[in-house]
Length: 330
Image (cartoon, rainbow, N blue to C red; front, top):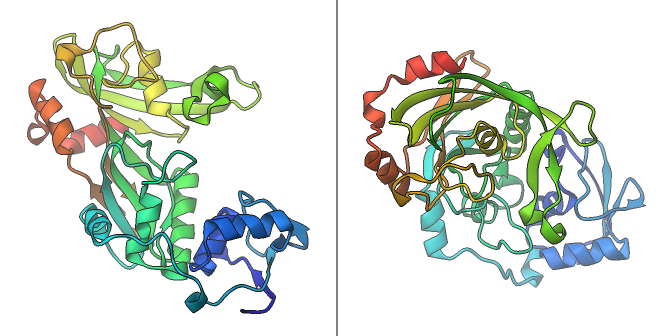
């Protein structure tokens, strides 16, 4: 059993939830014990009681009560060999700073009260504690494509800052029901969260808002139609200039051309050929600034189920000029 410690939050840990910060520093301590120690006031931040969801800031001093040694605790949630093989199979790029995954549709990025299978948990396959990779951005559970994590606290802080300052460039591919008009342009306005039925956070919606409304934030999306299947569907490239929750889904639905397979943000048009069984939204490309002046560009291939929908509608990614599309979204 260790004694009381006072630990200072460093730069690479800035903005992390208290419980996740604790797990990185003391990976052998379970979530249940962390919650208990916070409830009792044994874990304190700058001398005050704190809840597990507190966001820590660089320079904060955290009191760590006496803890059992690693060998005294049986680790309960250990990844199976199958889970390790699965998550390593999602890797499409890695270097000393980051790991990039082609996240499949249906895999949540973070856990919750009803979500026990998620990418954040699977990151245990790449290290523990301070060597464990860290999330720096998000994708919706049903959105596939490029997602990166930082390999070190310093790298994670740098990447998170690049996302927060909108210095990364993201390109998404979507299949829209119908064809947006005009075929190229911008969608902008203000969005805010609306409570879901019964206060269920999983049913929260983003809705249009006015400037100055409480909780409203400006949202801007650039888009261009790559190809169409008559008037029944279109292949759209999207660039979220801002990064609001469900932004692309809300914006296409607002134009009357919702994303095929979207159950939350819909339009009056019927899904073509009964293809709307999954959300047809894919994070195709991510451009990350780097210190040497040359950006890192990561691309994720379409997952097989989505590629099949593309093929059914006559859309062929091999026949397009992606450089021209990027120029249209710039």
